[in-house]
Length: 182
Image (tube, rainbow, N blue to C red; front, top):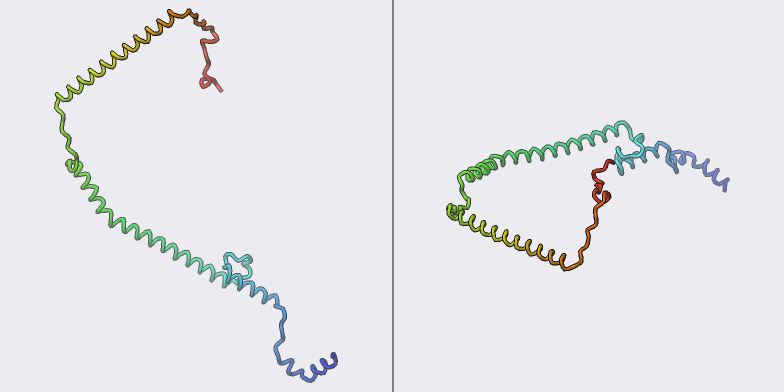
């Protein structure tokens, strides 16, 4: 087997050498190149774990793209704000006129409900009626107090007299916690 292989090499040497060399494994340069391409394709230059895989030119391209994207977004935002401002400018005069009309109508008294003005006599009658009601309520209150006093007097006279305990110095003063120093 070895002999036949060596003989075939000698016979077909020119043909074998004319073919490109087979590469079963990638070289380190090819590995780096494939890593760089996959990083750009999947993640992007900013998020790539190893930015050293990118060449300077590719980094500049990526940075330019990002700057342009940020610039476009900023311009869109400014355009929206400008539109909003223009709308407010267009609406403002009409709004001012409406407010002015409403103020003027209030001053003129337009749209307000007109109530009948009471006469002086009506007010005096109401005051007199209120005074009578207050007097009646006061009399009822006095009668209730008299009745309560009478009931307590009857209860005291009917039952044995109990002496009220004398307040000693201890009972006279109770400190308040909220007034104490802390």
